[in-house]
Image (cartoon, rainbow, N blue to C red; front, side, top):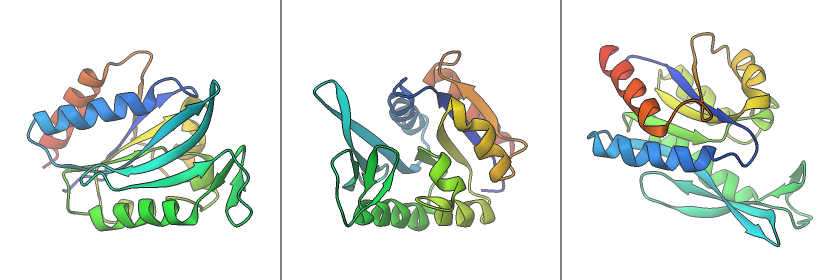
Amino acid sequence: MKTSKVYLVSGGKASGKTKSIKKIIYLLRQRGLNPGGIYSEGFWENGERSHYEVVGVAREERALLCSSRVKPSWFGAGKYFFNPEGVRLGSEILMKNCGEHDLLLIDEVGRLETKKMLWYDAIQKLLANNQAMIWAVRDEFTGLVTRFFGLDDAVNFSIKKYTPEAICDFVVDDIQKNL
């Protein structure tokens, strides 16, 4: 892949970014592409998000990423405690997927990566290797993330305005013209 193009799928908290990412993965496969990367599937208990699992796009490996329940040996950020094993698995998947797939998806990139945590090291490697990627990013962090990673040419698709089909069509066409 000759492009290091990064595409953002943005939306508010619990607005459907992961649902859009999963649909984009399906559509990319339908178009004959080989997507890789990770997404974070959220789970609810008593009307609130209780935990997330990190899921590998290519092989569907899974691990608990974070939980709202206090875990003393895990690091806390916001209302969640992050499982070192889940972070390790997600980072490992991203590092292994570098150069192995047409496009990588990362759900999601935000404030923790700008503090050089979670997927930061993997993102640095992916950017250095010119890997094309789609990142899910909360609306409130898009400016921070693009400035921090120097993504002046990132294309931002708000899920309020663009369907997964429209995003997929644009990304596939854009990647193919940069081959």
